[in-house]
Amino acid sequence: MPAKPIGVVAEVTDAVARALEKNDDLPVVIREGIGKIAAIPRGRTAQALVGIVGEIYVRNNVYANEDVISAIEMFGGGSVDDPNYRLDSLHVVN
Image (tube, rainbow, N blue to C red):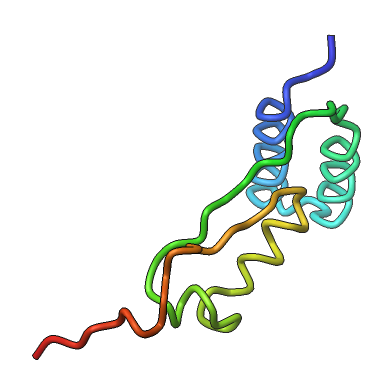
């Protein structure tokens, strides 16, 4: 039976932590970890969909949100912004 993704990620995280504690060759440990994570079998499941909500500037500004949409898509997910949001519905209250 193949290892579960969360177990593999925990194993790799622990290996990196041990390498940092012992001052081992970190690039080697990271390369091995990437190989283990890449070897996790991928099923044909539906794409994870992540809703992007929050303040408009943070949602729509790549610098402010650290390009979160690209990160979601890089890891196989999809993203959706609030389709009901309208700029003219923004109200300022003093």
